Length: 200
Image (cartoon, rainbow, N blue to C red):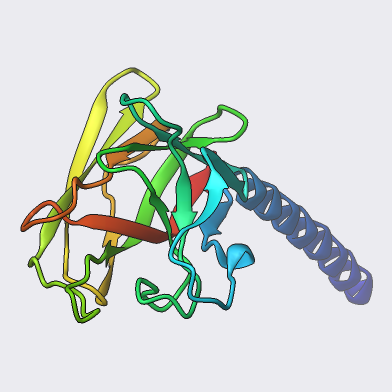
């Protein structure tokens, strides 16, 4: 009698644990985390400007380059032997003052959790990076209710790479930021990597 009760209890516990695991797996699938690291683009050469076009999609997310001036906006990356390579494959808007927009490829909502940034350096006559000092990049996220949230990241001179966490960037339809003008203190251009997002 006691054995039968124990056996019944164990069977019920097994069924319960299977149900919990199934629900947890389903919830994680609905709220998955993706990391855009661009390593599938990695090329071993010294080319500074490999172009992927005006948009690039990876892991359910799309990055799009825009610019108001004539000329086709484009997203680029440097080869691993390039003087602009900061240790991993990073994308950048190849047009000065160009806009970069991050959205989900299916148009649904996402949380923007973190991103790595590095300077895209200018060089002096001897080929050494010019140290223009730290510079700011401002990100604006648009929420599903139309409200916006912003965060300004201070990027350090090349080749330092910093990872920034974005608090409050949840339930977004898009995140937008701009490439620098280049050529002087506070105007430096940047490259980005390891974009971490969460799906709902």
